[in-house]
Length: 230
Image 1 (cartoon, rainbow, N blue to C red):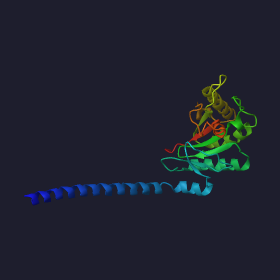
Image 2: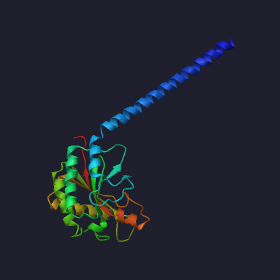
Image 3: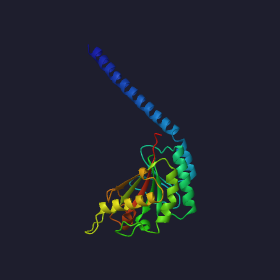
């Protein structure tokens, strides 16, 4: 009788092992499928990488400034997939940056947007929301590419975390974004394509405890919002 029970227990153990093996096989198949699909969808991404050769890939919260037209990719869950409209826009921006000195404007790209990040040092005096005269020609040169693009534009204002009795960071960030948006409209960009946001200190790029980090956080972002469903 004990031998019979031992055989039954052995059969139950074998059933458990077989079920576990099946689960592992299914998981392996699933991961192979995901890798295959991702590889299939990255053809345009590969061409983009080879052409622009970005300086680095960083997390969204650790973006590093780039020089000239080194476009930096923002690492996310999905690899960026570039459609023809996006590639055309990047090509035109590349030509614009090649012809002029855009020191103080950095470019970032992921599957959802192209971000033109304008530093406070280039665009505003400390505590002011009046766009510097020296920044206007540079921003104006970016407008033709945005005019030809079918995408909407989201202008975001950002500050550091320092507080002052005379300055409200949320208000300042919104006023700066409005100044840039107003300038874009005055120079031919369709107002129906533009939205404006002010985030104050709540979306930092760097550590506000350091001077260098605070300087990076004081910025306006002109975000070209890519619609991948088209």
